[in-house]
Image: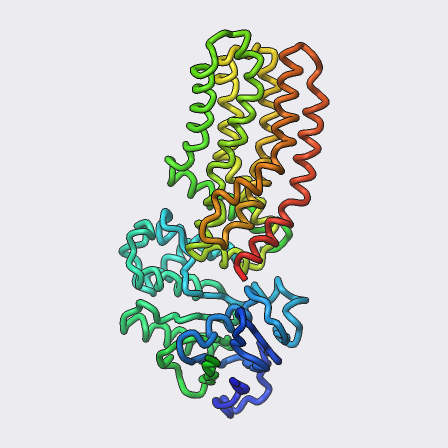
Length: 226
Length: 225
C-alpha cells in the first residue's frame, strides 16, 4: 500500500524546525467492495509540495477529497497543525483552498463576477487586486464575458486566479494542469514555487511533472488495488 | 470576515444576481400559478357562487404546485458546476448559507405569488375582505414550502434524476400548509375570524426556519460525499 510521504526534499534551506501543516494517519477508504487505500500516512511541512501520482482510478481524487473533509474516511485521522480537523473544521477550511475537477463557476456570471464571488467568500479584496490577478493569469481581455463562452483552459486559469487570491496556507489541487497550455503549465509551476517560498504548502494530484524546484518536492505514489 | 452570519449576504447577492440572469426560469412558477387558476373556471362553470367556494383551495393548491416547480435546480446547478463544493469548504456556516440560498429562491419564486394573488383572487370572485388573509397566509406559507422544498432538493441533488422523487418527498410534508392556508381564506370568506389557521402557519414557519437549515446542510454534505 502507499507508503509514508515526507521523504525527499531533505535539508530544506537548513531549517529543521519546520512546522508540520497537515498530517494524516492510518487513513482507510472503501468505495463499495473496493478498498482504495489502507493505512495511508502522510505529513506535509510548510514549504513543500506533495505530488500525488498513480494510475487512473487508483483513488487520487478520493484521497484529496478525504484530506479536505468532503468525504469521511472509514478509518484514520487528519490533523491540521496538530489538531484534529474534526475539532477545528472552520479554521482548517479557511486555511486551505480546494481546486477540484470542476471549477465552481456559474456560466451566467462573467469571469470578473465569478472571481469576485469566490474570493469574497473568503476575504475582502480590492477590485484593483482582482484585476491584477486576472491580468496575471492572462484573462484581462475576456474578464467581462460570461463564463459560458470561455474555453475550458480559460476557466482553469480563472480557478488559478481564485487560488492565488485565497490567501490560503495550503493548496489542494486535483489535476490542475487539465486543459492548460504550456504557458499555463509553467504558470502553475511558478505559482507553486512562490507559494512554497512564502511558507505555504500544496498537495497536487497530477499525471504530469509539476516542474517545481526539487527541494520543495515530495512524492506519494498510489498503487492500484484493482 | 467572521461571525455566524458571514457568508449569508454574499450567497444571497450571488443567487439573486443569477436569478435575474435567467429571467425565463424566474417567470416559470408565476406563469404556472396564473395558468392553473385561469384554467379552473373554464373546466368548472363561470358561476361566481361556485368559484367563490372553491377559490381558496384552487389558489393554495396552485401556489403549492408552483413553488415546487423551480426547486429542482436549487442545489443541482451548484452541484454540477462545482460551486457547491466551494461553498461547503468556504469556512462559513453551511446552515446559514443554505438559508441564504433558500431565501433567494423564495424571493424570486414565492414572493411574486404573494403579490399577484389578489389579482387572481378577484378573477375567482373571492370577496375583497378575504384578500388580506390570502396574502398573509401565502406570506407565511410559501417560505415554509421553499424550506421544505430545499430539503427535498438537497436530498435528491446527488441522484441523477430527482424531480419525481422530490415532489413525492415534499408533497406529504406540505399538506398541512395547504390545509391551514385554504382554511384561513375559507373562514375569511364566511366572515369569520381567520386568525387560528394563520397562527398555525406562522408556528410552522418558525419551526421550519429553526430546524430545516440544519437538515438541509446535512443533506448537502451527504450528497457531496
